[in-house]
Length: 224
Image (cartoon, rainbow, N blue to C red):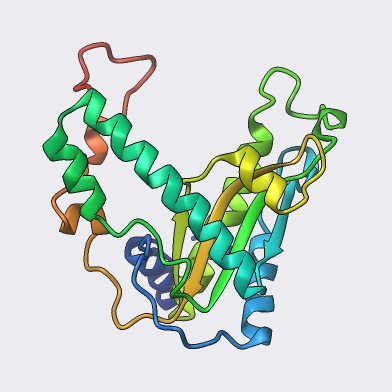
């Protein structure tokens, strides 16, 4: 008997929120109450971090003009990404990408920018040979925020279409700090039944068994 396990209903709730988390792009403009936003950010702040360095910094975008300028940066990168897709694949795939809704920056209730802090070189514990563990730690904080938001009925979308240097300059970030994600949070009409890119026919999910190996790298495994 495991005395540390949660109750059956509590465990089911955890697995449910993991399974039903979605990267949302469609939002309602309904504001998020300040106390709920603080609760979600506290969940993010409870994330594990290598060497307890807590490298995450969240910038709340409350200025409407600044939100518009961030959206313009994302839109510019969207065009550049479409062009790159056209070069690697074909013009039809590029047009298909341009039809996708890739963000909800102007629609959602809240916009946050998740960043890596500056002066990270001072943190060596757990990072001497794997310096990217600071990024892994920020990703854990983002995932915590995502799951907590879903549990509260709030949608969240992770936007990565932007020039990090341009966004850092726009936000007045110090040297060494780096934006990782633009996070859109807000109420929604409905949550996607499957990941949006699957629903739109852009991509398909691969099963776990294709990702699982044992005792070493399986060179016969199916490649993406």
